[in-house]
Image 1 (tube, one colour):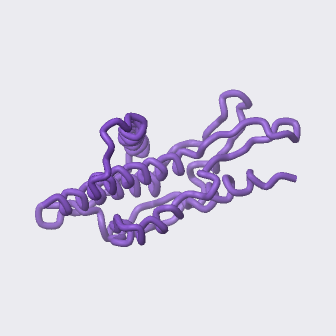
Image 2 (image 1 turned 120 degrees about the vertical axis):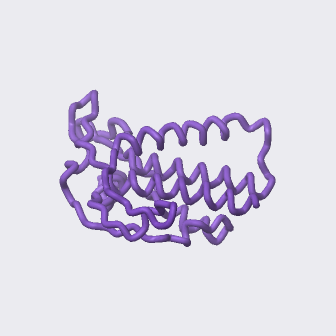
Length: 181
């Protein structure tokens, strides 16, 4: 049944992104031009999180759109960097880029489910295919080694404790950079 396939795809995408986002153990990001740290250190703000089934994220209807629209800041998760007290350049935070990619994949699934896919929309296809590629690399980069028990013949990842970075400092960094004096 097509609905079961769509739900399975959503579940796989959500599980993959959640693992990457919550467990990412990367070092601070240095901007190549200014060699300045733009994110909290990897070991900062860690907490234990038990992954649970979040069926609210399974909703492909317009009701679910509101929840999905709130997973990144209104500014898209970008950071404005000042150079000599002037607006210098803009960067994106990887976590928000990945969440944006999940939004794009979700929209593609919605279009498939609703039969509103337009065959000539190459930008849209290129966008979500880029997103799949980007999420694969992000998940591999995080290399979460948390052991997840097999339940029957499946691993659903639920009810397993992970050591996660707290996303709040990234939200604060993104949102505070938009406050201009």
